[in-house]
Length: 88
Image (tube, rainbow, N blue to C red; front, side, top):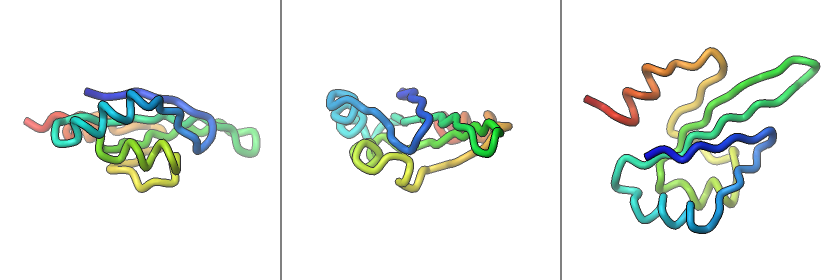
């Protein structure tokens, strides 16, 4: 299961029931994928942050300052992402 979020800042808005679900199922393949889209010096930047479910409370409290399991900038390596969340 992947909880998808987007933000333009370092703040990730997770509701209490989302944190509870991700934390309760942290031993399963549950993930939090956050896309940050922001503009810096008239240039748009897109980043992906992938967190394990057990990191949900930390991300709720500290946002994108929490060390992600994986981090990418555009262009994204989708094969690496899928390989991590659903290894075969």
